[in-house]
Length: 346
Image (cartoon, rainbow, N blue to C red):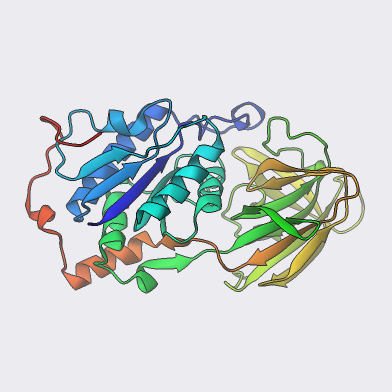
């Protein structure tokens, strides 16, 4: 039996960057529509069963309304608190249940929370958040089909997915958290609204990737390198106040519609396994664009580049491989009805 997990974050796409920047609100009704198409794509690809994270909005149950599916769709047996810990717990439970792929709806923060629960199951990351570097914009039908082909083994995992890196946050030598895209030393003592927009308070940046087309803190890295960063490398950037005369200034899109001058003091490429020490406490560590870890006075904080992130579905490669293999599911020859009596188990 082929099992796929769905983790749809009802809170993604709604944080304070709608006020301090110009981020769009990604409403939950649209997430329902996306999940509906994902489910249809999963069934067409031959998936037998879906387990999903329950949530306060009921994204998946609403997506199942007026859709006739033969595959089983059931909620995970878990209590939801309405926090990011729900995504972490759901990922762990889905891995234990034997899920072959995790379909994740959210932004960088949601995918980070899922990775804290499991990196052993490939991610099909669908962008419905704010800073979307890790997930991608993809039509739900295609996302479901690609996840289904990976889960059923109809395409080889080593070609249909690619490895992502991660950053391990260490306090006094003990790993306490992780990031998938960026970790930043933020000169503040409160987590507050979590989002980052005051670049004068960002002192250090460690990145797993850096592209000039990125949005968020990793865009700074994209502005200071002149070639794509190798898979086995990361980037460490030391920043200074905007009114300083040291270093140089780049202009970076640090949030949707928020383009800031950023004072760069030093840029260094780092290798897998290398640790960068942050020399400020008390402070806050922002992970994937959100303040998450409080650093108490006297604590030693470092960030380590780790190759053991989740594998991520390469959608285009997966679909090409499926076409070349001509190994279509029997479900593809049957009509999947958008309307009619529902036979799912929810």
